[in-house]
Length: 64
Image (cartoon, rainbow, N blue to C red; front, side):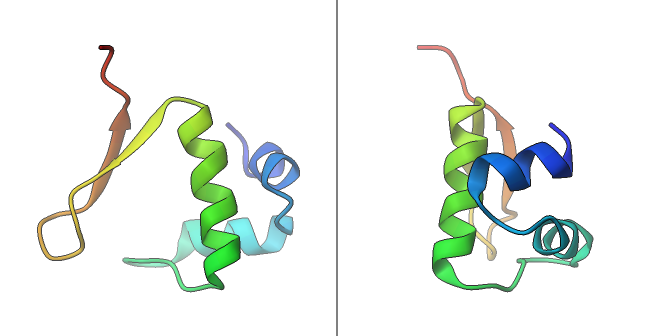
């Protein structure tokens, strides 16, 4: 998914998506912005795993 498409689907500004992508570690931002981006990615089949203390990451959602 492109940054442009993610911005469109989440209702977040393109520049915000680019800033979040280029940040090191946990991206900063308003909770509603982070939630909107996370929702779009989860709907696309991405699963957020772990925690900042335990090696956070993403993967394709496992089929059940």
